[in-house]
Image (cartoon, rainbow, N blue to C red; front, side):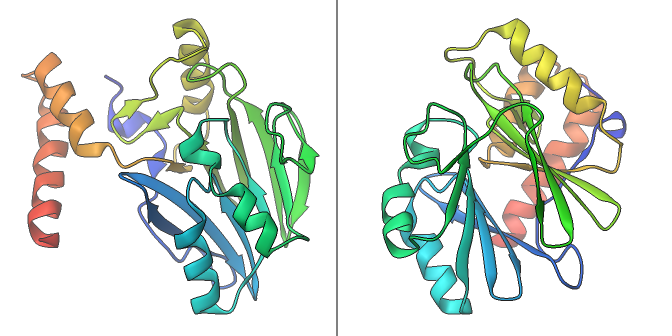
Length: 220
């Protein structure tokens, strides 16, 4: 288990800068659809369900400008057809295995976004073609890492390999320590429960688990 002090930080919420707003839209059982907005323009990442995205956009008077897809699983892509239907000018950035992509991207692809820059990383392991999106803005790195890395855990290996996933995690771990990470699922409690089973005497795991349990009780 990697010590928390040596890892980039997971971002829970919301206002990152005065002009840039990043919001987690809960979807399906445990997905996060991350939505970036500046002015009346918005970008969403991995829309597994169109309805909550459309609801948020309408409630806040936003136009969907771009969609970024990390990988092909349905809980990350099922909302694409309806979002494209409602926002036909929206650009879809994705790997070659996403039929709805308007812009096919891969390792090293980059483009400007507002006053920021987006860079694509190939982070295989969960799937062979998994991508992550690194956003550099206001002197802060933010990585939208899909199902590669979660809070207190990592993605299950499907058609990638354990070696690929390990290499992807090592690459992420080399990011600056203050990097904010935006995973696509909320698995924190389950991951910490598993980690505590594997390492029952690890004080850092126990401290993190106690913190999460307190947050859950407070939310209830």
